[in-house]
Every structure is written in C-alpha cells, then in structure tokens.
Length: 347
Image: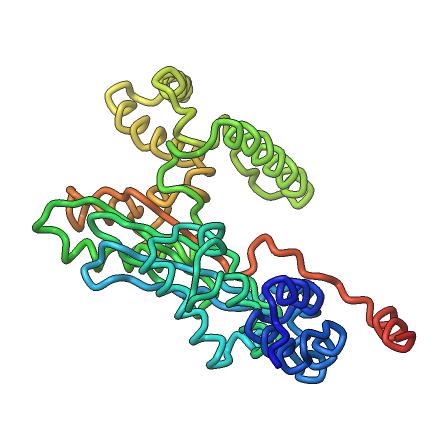
C-alpha cells in the first residue's frame, strides 16, 4: 500500500536530508510511517547527505564551456570536501552537466542556479541526491555567464578559470579569439582584479597608497641596517592619481635637480623624458599588481598586455573579465581530532 503524501515526503526530507524520490520510495515501503521510513533510509545509506551538508567543501573543480561561435562562455565552481572526489568521474560528469545547464538556460549566478530546475527536480533536491550517491557534501558555489562579440576562456588544471570578452572589427575576430585565450592564460597566472586602472575604486587606491608607502619605509629601515641602496618611496600608486599637475610638478623638480648638477640645458629634455617614464612606473605600482592592461604580458614581458592587444589589432577592446580561483574565500574548518573521537565515543 502506498504511504507517501506530499506532506509526509516534505517532513521526511527535512528530517533525513535525503532526496525527494528516495523519501517517496521509503514512505511507500513503510506504509507512511515516518520513523520506519527514516530507519529505511539510514540503512540504505541515504541519510548521509544530511550529515555531509554540514561539512566544509573547499576542494572541487572549476569548469568552463565556450559555445561554438565564441560569443558565450559559462564558468562554474562546484566544491567538494576532498580532492579525491574532485577527480571522480561521477563528480566530473555532474559538474560538466551543471555548466551545460547554466549555459543552456542563461543562468548568470549561483542564486539563479539554485532557483532552477534540473531533470524535473528543483536544483537543491537534484544536488542533494547527488550528494547521497557521491558521498560528500557538494556546493555549487559560483556561476558566471559572459556574452559578447568575441568571448574566450582558459581553465588551469580545474583550479583557476578566466573568461574574457571583447569587441573588435569583423576582420579581426579570428585573431581576437586566439589572443583572448592567451590573455586569459596570463590572467590565470598574474591575478589581476580589474581590466583597467580606471576601474580601481578610489577608496582602495587611497588605502593601498598608505600601505605600500609604509611597507617600503619598513623595508628601507632594514636596508639601512644592511648598508644597501634604499628603495624609492613613491608619492602615488596609480595612474589615476597622476594628474597633469602632478606630472608637471615632477618634471619641474627633475629639471631643477639636473640644472643644479650642471647638466647642459640642451640635453635636459631627453634626460627628463627617461626620468619621467621611470617616475610614472614607480608611482603606479598598484596598477601593475591589479590592472590587467597595465601588467607585463607573460608571453612577452618586454610589453604590457595593453601593448600586446594593440600590436595584434588596434580595434580590440576588452569589455568583460571574470576570474575564479578554487576555494577562494571558503573558510576551511579546523578539525579537533580529540574532540571528534570523544564525541563519537559518547554516541
């Protein structure tokens, strides 16, 4: 005799953490008796998902799917508890399926993913059933869905993923696809946080300005002790701060110093040109650390990423940049082994 009803299924799901279909089957097998159905699920190993859900998932994999015409790329981060499970074929198939589902349904973030339906199930139920089978807590933590004229991406060993989008002339699309892949590889390694220095938040620049100067002053104290050359302490840290007035003031100070050294006026202009270039570099350290276009290009460190783009085709303009790093921001739980053993002994 069938014993499952929507109300009983809901109650059993909340109590056991097992999937909807498993709860329905258990209730039918136990004539609607919640306690017997809970025991049935426990004996079948299907209540494990509930216990697993409290475990920290900081391992896992990042996957990327780029469509055939390079106008859409979807990236997901699905976390597991262990690296071992992250290499399991069932887990990899699950993550690839989630990424394809996100792209097919234009899902742009984790909240939209959780609100979606997969294989006739709401996403939390679908994932909970996979947890019961795979045997570890799984968390679909991040989703990015990028569209544009030209889109390409790169994922490094499942640990770091980057998507880039750009606009360009029609004739430049093929080489833009190739260039975006290379720049994505660069970004995976160099960890920029924004495309341009113009995208850096003013409060971030101000805070980092003070921090960078303080760090260099501290380093110089040690260099003095060692009798070594001191590092130049910059006034600024980003090109955002280098107004015409600031640059003019720096040039005037350089000319004054060169004249005081007895340098001929006719060569001072060329000397200042080189000095001001170095001054700009010294006073834009934040840009090279955080702004993609300002960084030295890993494929050719004699030029910046911006210069590499111009050399490829001047019509190429980056419009979007997304970077995921596996487990970033997840606090890993520190296990107290002695306490865990004691707790288990008491059960």
